[in-house]
Length: 325
Image: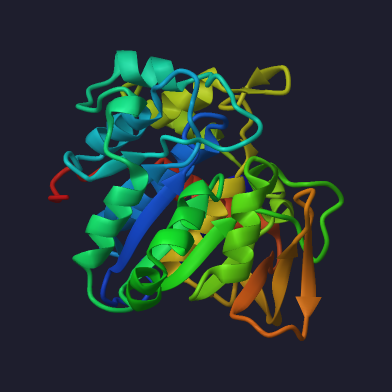
């Protein structure tokens, strides 16, 4: 009963979000290792169906050994009726933690899509450059939920484009105020993470490991149709000794996706500013209070189950399928 009440509350909360111009968003995802990337893309599509955002492009930042990350992205986009959204892939790949996905091959095989193999897709940097160039100044939010490889390339090769076009970067990575061990998204490409933490020219909002680890979602996907590729990803991805869909799993990426669109909802988030994130040589992260910079990190405000209910409701929301890309 309590879970039902929380779910109902989340729906009412979402319905009360003030109308505003849709957030223009690019998702930068390692769609391969964990199914929370599929969940984050589902959250963005659900918010787009509500008129809260417009998904401009999706780029992948981990060279999945199955070569099927782009196909998995496109299968999810197609399910939500957004065929033709630009998709780019990182051709170089991170320097650590390469993986064979538990679910991307199945999404490529079992669901409609038009994507080619990852190494035959447009380069992520080229997609970024083309899409950002077509957007209004200060008009784009980037949500990064994986390795920092593509972001570092933007810093190196197109810093003025980022400075001109990007309003905010929301990243899932690190642990705050100080990491106990290198978090996966940082460790995957430590050099890239350090470049972004040091050189990114606009605001960065960091969502640490500890945020999503407290948000258990995914079991509500059992109530969605079997032709839902996000449901399939959660059926195939193990969490411990069971499928992730059986009882859910942490939502490391979905919290960042929600924040990227809705921003600082005061009933859900506490935002800590007035400092910057330092990434060390090993991939550890430390919040340095008082240091100059445009960084902040977030904490969950109140009961994490309330925020988890919002995410679960969005992940399991039926697609409208009547919007153009």
